[in-house]
Length: 338
Image 1 (cartoon, rainbow, N blue to C red):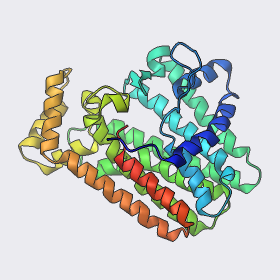
Image 2: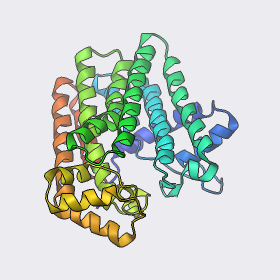
Image 3: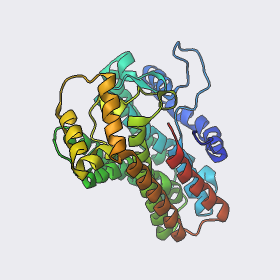
Image 4: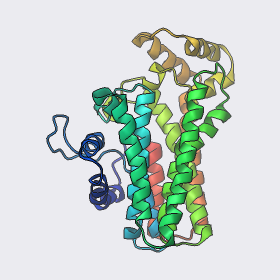
C-alpha cells in the first residue's frame, strides 16, 4: 500500500504553487501553456484542472531546510520554486531522451508537441530558475543560484554517464551508484540546503542538510529503479516494466549482473539484444531479477541511505518538529509506489 501523502507536503504545495505559477507566467504564451500542461495545471483538453504536478519533494526539502536553521519558511519560497523548475527541466529532456510517451498518466510534451517544444520548454525552465533566485536581494540569492548551478551541472553529468552506460555491455554497480549520485542526488542535496543558504545559515548546518539530501537522493533513485521494473502503472503513471522496455541498466539490474551466475548471464544476454521484447519476456526478466535478489537488495539499500540521511541531521541542530518532518520525508521516499 502506498503511504499517505504527508501533511507537510500538502502544506508546501499550497504555499509554493502560487509562486511557481507566477514564475511560469513570465514565459512567453506558448511556452507558458506547454509548461502548464506538463505540470498538470490544465486538463488534457485545455480545461482547468486541479493537479499537484508531481510529488513536490524538492520544494518541501527547500522549505524544511529554512525551518531547520530557525528561519521563516517564506524565505525559502524562491529556492523551492527554483529547484522545482530545474527538476522539471530535467524531466522534459529525460522524456525525450528516453522516448517516454507518458508521464503522470498524460502524454509527454515531446510526444504531443514534438522534440523542439520539449527542448525549448526545458531550457526556458532552467533559465527561469536562475532568474527567480537572482531576484532575491542581497548575497544569499547569488549564493543559492551558484548552489543550484553546480547541482544542475552535476545532474547533467549524471545524465551523460547514464547515456554512455547504455552502450557498454558490463557496468559495475558502484559506477551506477556514482551516476545516480550525480543525476538524482545532486539536485535533492541542493534542495535540502537551499533554504538554509537563503537564510544565511552557518556552513556546518548547510553541509549537514546537503548530506541529508545526498543520501535521500540515493534512496530515491533506488526506489525509482525498483518502480521502473516492478511498479504498478496505476501509481507510477508509466507503462509496466518501463525500465526493462528501454533495456536500462538500473541499479537492480547492475546488482544482479555483478553477482554472476546463470541469472547474470540471462540478464546480460537480454540487455545485449536489440529486438523489441514482448510482455512475456519482460515479465520473465523481472522474475529473474527478483529471484536473484535485485529487488530486495535495492529496497535494503534505499532503507540504509534513508537511515544515513537521518543520521546526517545530527549535525544540523534543527528543532524537534522539523527533524520529525525530515525523517517523515525520508520514510515517504522509501515507502512510495510512484
